[in-house]
Length: 501
Image (cartoon, rainbow, N blue to C red; front, side, top):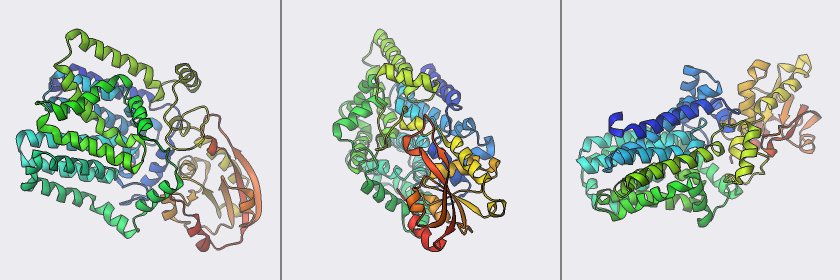
């Protein structure tokens, strides 16, 4: 298998794995990692903001390796390595040689976007495996006509939906691409329909969960759009940022990939995949989500573009292309994966003068959001623990902790047990569905709220701490309050605490 890919593709995969294993211990837990670990303690067939696979993977990771940073980031590192290898395999299946496989793998390795999403536990690290796995199956079906391969497509598509609902976008793109090309004849055979049935069957548990819970994911998405939380990118800015996060020197590769799929005899049999890519991109831009939603589709273009360039580059220019892409990747890597000490990173980013792409419309501190959201959580929990230890002994067992978001709550749940803290409560995302448990709220430690609001709800309100960290997001600098004597019934207040956005 590795002989088919060649030394270049295998080397790129090894570098990818070693880089993430090295960086895996750096900085701290990312905010979403704290939440996924919390979900792993409450396994279900669905969650407000994601399907269940990431929680199952987190549970498996903890069971096998523990809850340390390096432990929970091992599977994402493997997934990213798999994506690099998949790019090489797709290049070979599209008619390329070992150089094309190596170039496709290098471009996938070098892209800051992939370096970023593969550096921490998240569903985004696994998504390219499902998208590109499905693309590889389609290529093989077109080449061989083997209808049995559709079973793998159905399984991958179903698992992809259990990982992230945006699998549906790429699936629609593939269906539309096949219908727009002579490959529409595949719909007259049973294989593709069996794949659809299998995909629905694998996805059914999450679909049933959503139906039973009133489709909370759709409510969440509507709330996000209404709040304008995501940065609104126009056409030019969207593609400008795509050029950056896929590495500027790799642009000629993936642009050539579209040309290869649409306008060359070698790529013509696979034109459906070109349409799939364009339709996927159009749907993502129409829905106005974040640019990383398109990341999983790029290995396909890296592969196709590498095939195009392979037959056109001389030996000299082949070496020049590989060397220049690798050199730019080395320069860009610290902006995407935490390989530098924080202060060194800040100086390095200032020296380069590169502004990090913004994900949300939140105020930034000295670090970009993906780095800043890895700081302050353990220190925050220490502040909460100090407040908890000061609670009168007769009330401590009846004291609850309320957090405003899943990062705060997840941090209390991860770091709190060693400090004797009870599990956190929150109205944010799936914490709302987990409910207030048996708490009467007669004694509460409340994070990140306003004193004037709390005085309307409790007889006694005391500020007992302040959370600040020089590297964390500025909106995670807040006061901590101790409250007693609720003026409400928990069952009446809890529905008003729902925060799905």
